[in-house]
Length: 231
Image: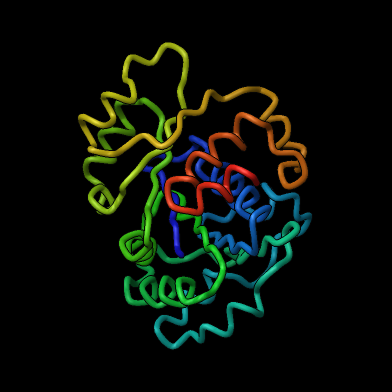
């Protein structure tokens, strides 16, 4: 099953939350995390940035071989495999055909596959989000984020959202449902302890419980509920 995460406005914690979901899912069984934003190696405490990755795969377009994904895969944590973005930065016009090919290659795998699309600002990323079994947005209760979301190609394909609450914001989960039509799967109150864990590269071994709890809520929305609760 392919599940994608994206955000209409960067910097809200999309990549960290995608990593947390992957780590929690990996407690239940083999899990694949595909990185199209570029920060997952650092988030998961991998010291060196991989040279080759998904950006290179997408650059080959529809000629890329699904088996080539195995050559860029990294062990990130017990039962968790990472497909890194790689050092090559993609062109903003990375093709939708290549995105569809990658989505199909990932969906064909027998493991749970989560993909971090970042801001989904290329045709390839949009195609993956549209092709995923479930697409989830990470968003702050911010007018600018709401405004960008209403104009984004993934507005309709997105079926749920994770809201990162911030003190002093006027907008609420009710506003998000009313304006964007997305179901709020979890609300997260950012805490210094979580930021410290990420900055220290310890997320893979020490997920803060509030973040793990929110990840489980999201996993329960598409997985084996009893299994995720036990993870």
